[in-house]
Each structure stands twice: as C-alpha cells, then as structure tokens.
Length: 168
Image (tube, rainbow, N blue to C red; front, side, top):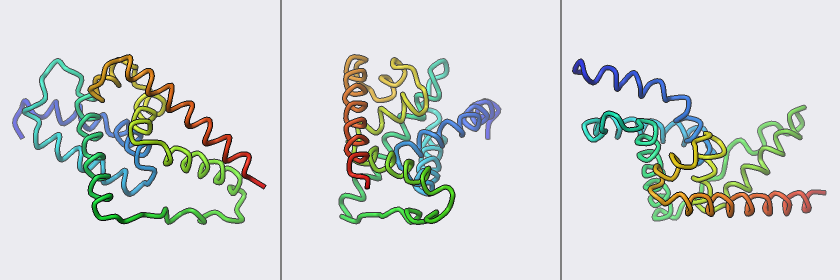
C-alpha cells in the first residue's frame, strides 16, 4: 500500500456502515448484502486509480455497488434459479412474531418492486442520500430520480395496502 492509498483506504473503511445499509436495502438478504459489500470493495480497491480526488467517494462506491448488484441479478436470471429466504419462519410463536410479520410484509412488498424502484428507495429513503447525489450515483437526471421515487413510493404503498387487506 502506498502512502497516498492509506487515506483512501481509511475513507473507504469509514463508509462500511453506509455500504452495508445500502446493500441490505437492495438485497433483502444479510448474506447477499455482505457479499455485495465485499464485491464492491474489491472492485473499488482494485480500481482505486479511477477515483478522482475531490469527487464524492461514497457516490463512486455506491455506483460500483449498484452495478455489481445489477450484474448479480442478471447472473441469477440467467441461471433461472429462485432463492427463498431461509429465515421466513424463524420466529414463529415468539413475541417477535407480529413485528417479524410486519417486517416480512415490508420486505416482500419491496422485493416486488422493480430494480429501479428498489435501488432508488435504498439510496434516498434508507441511506438518506440527497436527491442530487442519488441521481449522480444512478447516472440519471434529477427529474427522473424524483419521478422514479414518487412512483416507487406509490407502488410500495399500494403493495402494502393490498397485503394489509389480505391479512385475516
């Protein structure tokens, strides 16, 4: 590691909690999220010469992570393999059952959203990125981001209200 790389590595390490939070918001699986963070960090460190000093490091790594997740989804579609969450029945009968059911309903609703909607919700609503920065990460105009976010919120509300109606 060169002397110039040390501050970059420290800055990347400081971003780990945000990277994990973003990864979990788009993968909905702890193991997939950890794998995604690892892939993104490997790519970022391997291509650190591409990062331009003075630009937002977090936006650069979020973009790498978004692209890595898109690659993973494409791979899964090609394999035509569906993954069911292991922990769906983990807390049946516990005091956590109701909260767990709500969390599962939200996770299910978010998983039914398109990738574009899920990613924009992850960046803006979960990670709290300002609209301008989220638009830069996604490489889309700000207007596209705001309309995509509005549609994602509407779709999420509709899915959650449909799920609430179908409960006994």
